[in-house]
Image (cartoon, rainbow, N blue to C red):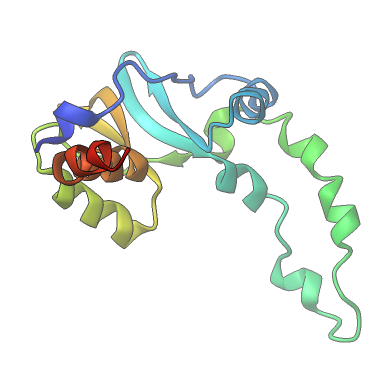
Length: 153
């Protein structure tokens, strides 16, 4: 079974110059853990929740005083500064992608190796879809067990 058979087509995308506040609003409202970033029809990166939150993580400097823990509540307030940035400021450029014409288990291997729950599907640098581990699991389930579970009812 190929990626093209199960991927989500026409995924929501954002531009690198989009305001991060708008993008994180979409992420929170629609429960997107990440979105592909496109510019002039080309995939240029991915913006994920981890990219946004990473900007608030403690640095080594925050741990310089071994007796005092970092001010985590103060760090949370940095979120207001982070969301005033542009997508390009925090996105992961040169996203790892899969091709629509590879086997779904090969795609799953790439995803598991990189600890991705979803991955852009690109053909010649152009985004053609998104693939999630859930898409793969559902396809394998349907191919192997869907008939058996309908007989249980």
